[in-house]
Length: 195
Image (cartoon, rainbow, N blue to C red; front, side):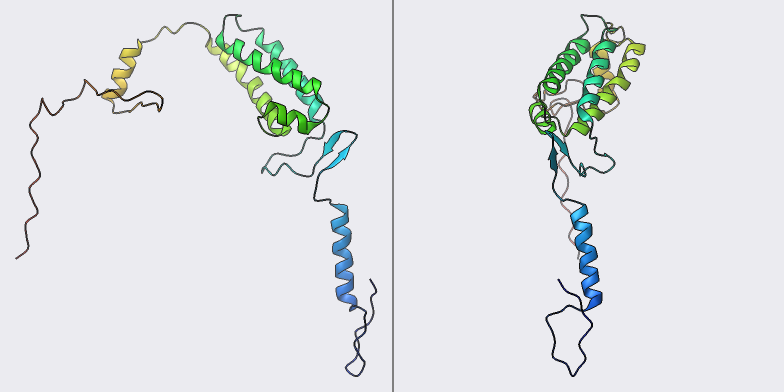
């Protein structure tokens, strides 16, 4: 690429670009070469520029961070009773993920095998779990519920007009509200015609 002065009106246009355009193109080309658009592989580890998630920065050392977070999660789970369902489920998931992180060399393979997002999202999930555990321990969520019976809770919610309907449970007719057999239904009168 050659830069030259602009030709005058009397000169024939040359094969050279105008200096201003030439310098702009060179500046853009140098910026593009400094910021690769695709992720590079360095020694089996990925170097990427962005997660494409607003507010979630790239973590180049994700593997050791995940190993540490999962080890801390397993340590904190020891405070829960062994019979706690929460402990059983989180322990199984954490052990499975920790095994994948230790077995795989590349971050892409970790993401693919775990299947729960990018490694940065996995770090975020593990941190959230660690923040949740003290709250669950403080409230002793693993102890049996000693409040109102399920029937009382449901009837109270119905009385307040709060509908509870799960997609996987077919709706059963309510016995708390009057039905067509118990009340007289009156058909609406037709609208009066304008004369």
